[in-house]
Length: 112
Ligand SMILES: [Zn+2]
Ligand SMILES: [Zn+2]
Ligand SMILES: [Zn+2]
Figure 1 (cartoon, rainbow, N blue to C red):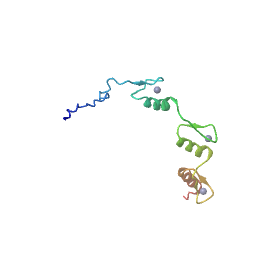
Figure 2 (figure 1 turned 60 degrees about the vertical axis):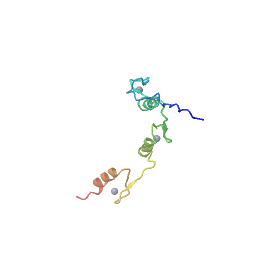
Figure 3 (figure 1 turned 120 degrees about the vertical axis):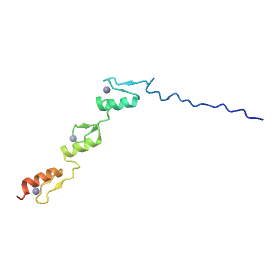
Figure 4 (figure 1 turned 30 degrees about the horizontal axis):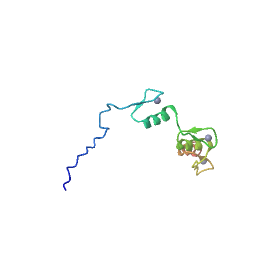
């Protein structure tokens, strides 16, 4: 028995590189932004139009932010939570940033 020559099954995918010809552009309904994928539109909407954003809520006030990082910064500056205080070596003064501490040292302990 002879096996017949196998038909070459050409795998010509439907998505060739067609230089954006035939691309179904997804249009942002809120502005002129267009993207090739719906995913990009979703991200764009969140960034530009605040749509579908999973807000991070501050547990201590009404502040909301798009990223957890912003919440952390907010908590430190408004509620003094998670602040790594810089202690002045000359007195009891504490500062949130090195810059603040330096300012304090310059104005209070500076030796001319
Ligand atoms: Zn848009
Ligand atoms: Zn807050
Ligand atoms: Zn001091």
